[in-house]
Image (cartoon, rainbow, N blue to C red; front, side, top):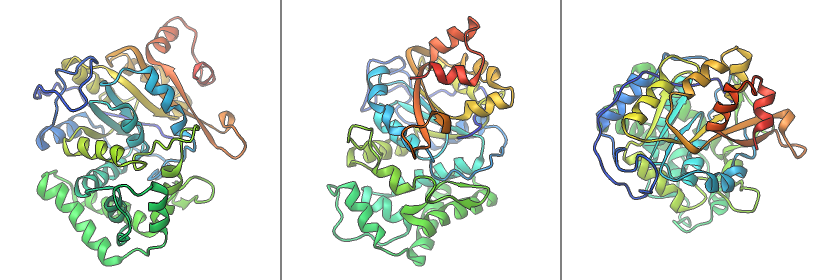
Length: 369
């Protein structure tokens, strides 16, 4: 649900290596197996645009059924490509499902970058899902929880535990220490204040944190963090990044290797997407998945969708590269569900736009599956 994306062209030299999930996809030999802290922050600074505005905080997704496309998405793309996505932590669920070699998370708000840096620190600090939730919500870990505990049982246990102020203070200090002292990311005093505010929301609301707009919590109207983690793909299979230890470990590993890179920028901006495209081209890599949420809705409203597409044309893609987009209200089914998630071929969309067959948001949605 946003307007978003990213920053400036730069080809950053990186080590050649094979990663645990090396596939036959393009770029498998040339994308870095790990970014140094310095290289990671260079990408953040040089690809990012100035901080922008969006009306909602978006600490938690408001998309009810975003997992439902995962089985089809897995059967469509080639593993080993690069993931692009916007917004908060629903990106981790998609990343756990498609196993990219690298991920970029561009968003118009610097607050989203800080949110992802918070998550980065928490993943790195946590040995398993139960510890991650303990740190995320600043609640003591119930002694009965272990690596094999079902995700629903985990949330039931944490719902019964009160947040602890001393643990919050200790955890916030540890997050800051991980980012600033260990990784040496040059966060400003404003960034640190933003981290405090974001982390405080998870401390105060816990598993029941929900999407908010213009400073107003909309719990009850939109899914909570817990709801999204307990959701499934429509067939009964839970795909959330905390659904299994394997999913959690995949995201943890990528965070440890600095391979999930949050950015600030606009989808129709002059630097970010083009910078990603140049970086991927220099590493002979292709975009496998581009999750846009419903950003295109706002781009059409602002007359910027074709500018966005010019940026998309700078991205290396293959014949299976796929947009994942969300549609609210008029697309949502069944009753009570506010959004649907749809797939679309990136190369076919670009082809059809050139042919003059797509020129409105309705036509974009109509072609999406």
